[in-house]
Image 1 (cartoon, one colour):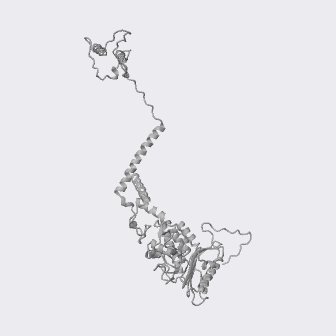
Image 2 (cartoon, one colour):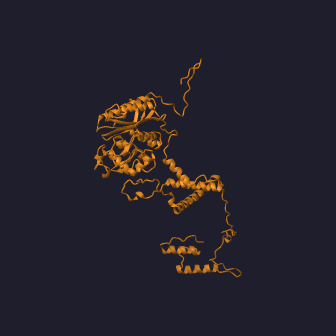
Image 3 (cartoon, one colour):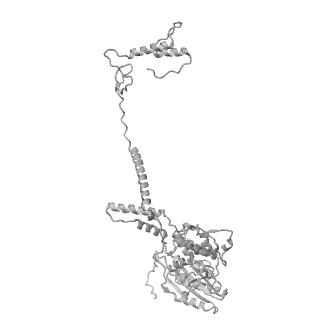
Length: 494
């Protein structure tokens, strides 16, 4: 059998030698006559025909017939060769089976997830779109002129919460137990956990008037010049006792109106409606004079981060910053609705700052009770509350309530002054651990310094009054019991 064709030789003599090898003709000795190449080829063909022609009684074999493996004869031995038996495969080990099963389950899970996601977004896409959640509008775009500001937004966390609720409900149905969660309840729980402030269980309420302090404050209000009138409200947050010296009188708010504006801002932050790093544009309609430095940044800066704006509004009483926040929060009407919801009936914004005419109003009682709710965590999350109180501790003007405190006391406050009305409201922490809230407004002739000194005297009187009151023990811990020495029992005083 020819296994491969030899390489074509270059010389005719080599061709004749190869042909002899192929046809089985031996190479003649040197000097013998060598037939031509054509004659050799004819002789080789005749020899092959004779060998391939069958003899009498033999069957002619078709050279083109496909022969099976069982018909193949062994070369040189003449025996039938059987097919080689297949070696049985080795069984998989436990870890190979586990790996293979994990791969298969992963592929199936990816497929099911893709199908489920496609079905959810195709058949119920509007279920996860936020609708109007508040009665009053609140802009959501950084640029107020953007057309996309009123379009609904999709919240991925609500999608996940709804899917989780649906899976739980279907599982309960299969088990035959009542549904423990639905997509609606899961969404409501997620929203409540994200936006609701953490309030103390013992909310401070004014429960009893402190007559002694009220008389002191009333006497101070008449000791100055007749043209100076003071209106004050103080409350002890440890026991709810309050002192009210005409503190429920509605008066021009001046810059103390910035306290509820700041609280409304951080409330919107807790609700996810405003981001602290959001850039607020500095536009011509919000730039005003009087207090603040942002009015001088026209042409230098076009926007400010929201946190910087609210900080300037409190620390340096920037009127431009206040107008930027009022606009961003939704306007005067929206803020007035929030004030009413916080039970501040005498507090209202009628005009943008600086409001030198005194059309924006409030009362010392409204301001003090609002600060009581703020420090107790009733209005904001603890993180936002602490951030706002830290800003209020940085107030630059310290000529009113801080002047009546001792050096180790701390105060988070905001002042106000429009010439004819001056005031201050804040939360005071004393070195003995007591905390109280106070708000004072005073009317006076324009820029009369007697009004300022009167507020200082009122602050000093209230501080000394509360200094003589021992703060109660921590409500979470029972008061320590006094050890009674052996002997007759001591007499009890009424």
